[in-house]
Image (cartoon, rainbow, N blue to C red; front, side):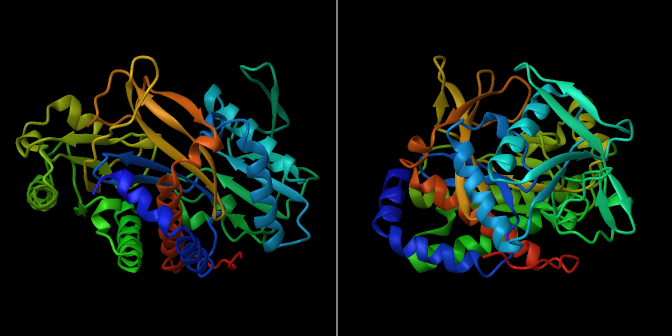
Length: 408
């Protein structure tokens, strides 16, 4: 089966699929939003990463803003119909012009939904109202975040709900602990409290359930994976675990390739269990690649986002991309954005200097917004990204630290 056949299968059963997704998503708490990196190999398509605190909203099409505002308005009004004031808690990337543009787009979406917004920063250097000049000539207003007796505020501005756009890679700061107002997504879904292997275990269960109900092989929509305990690349600690699990994973992938007559060589990605931004990622084409990692590669695999030490990794089936974009036909992958249950847009991430089997989320990448009309032609993208959101929602239910109301 190729993706066109899978897409036809999904379209033939679209009404039943929509009903299935609606029922399953309503059983779990909404995580507000997420972005899903997809890889389309033509013989399969699957999520390779799901970010619960997505940046990059500045890369989605302008036509997605109104759709995003509508989806957010419905979501938050169902949680609390009296919601008027929103606090947005960002990353501390004050020197990253692209991230600041992401915040501007989020501001447009939130205010477009009819809410009053204040961006409230954790950055210790922001102690008063601060303005940032953006590349498009606009200004972004950022205020310091304060906590008074468990109530987050910024001077006189007291949010009814807080939106977190910070993945808390360095852990949960004291100021965000025991907060009285709802924070979406939960602070306990930050990288200080979760691992990718746990998430992909939930996604694997979702994929099997969905594929069983609609009669196709779940491998067509999920990456095989394994994980190791403690690893330390500079000292080679845990290398035996990497070799053992990589051997098993290569064998499992080859079995599926033989089943479908795929004449390609399997490959595997090793990724940090926690973190984003494409940091802490390497590709393994053969087992000797693990043994022969040079010092530069070992150092690169030892430090993740925010200079956090990498001690655990996930081994994930490599999915080659057949997508290309731009006049140079650069290797590309679709990235879908969701608010609540709704896919609101996305973009193509492309990289002219990376091949079809490499990590495209790396310096030198480019982004092309994907119009909603184009996304509607790719129903499979929408379905799989919503399955990815469902897996994250189920993961949150299994997290004992999270107590969140279910948002219909």
